[in-house]
Length: 209
Image 1 (cartoon, one colour):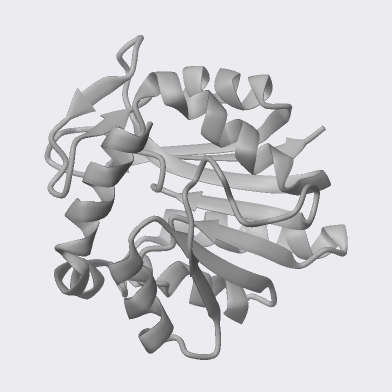
Image 2 (cartoon, rainbow, N blue to C red):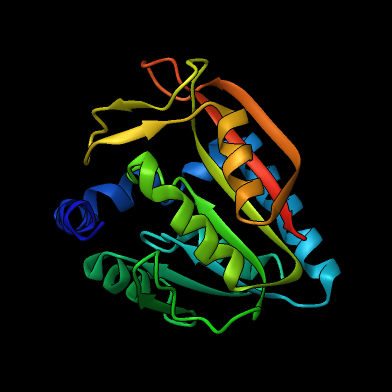
């Protein structure tokens, strides 16, 4: 796991300013993703535990959105350069460097975890461990919203992402992995291709048993 994460960290460290300029305002033109995040925030508030982690927060724009939606949000990212950028862009919020398989959060502490396209670079065999770690930090009844590229193929498809290699997933297979981590998927949204590659955008909303 360490080798590909080191490669991913170095790749994102090298594109911070470009990435932030391309994506920091992107949700303004992505109504499906924006509304799924809004639904996630509303449901988390309903649990009575507003603490959430934006895992793979990048430049911090989604963490800031969660904060604006009334959540006590912290941003976590593998890339120290992304964390530095997020801290400068959103000085009132907390951002920390963290590896996704070892989140710096106590067991059962959070009402929600957001994973917004942050596991797309994870090789399929390593994904269950990351989902188990996200389940670990959720309180009973806590929510996970995961977004990723979806494919109609029966197995995950590796592709050349602009930053570093990534994977698209069959939505049903991803939901099975969530179930294996103790998370019940109760809502899903798949919509039009996210890129010229033809992958769908997928958003799965799950609750810890």
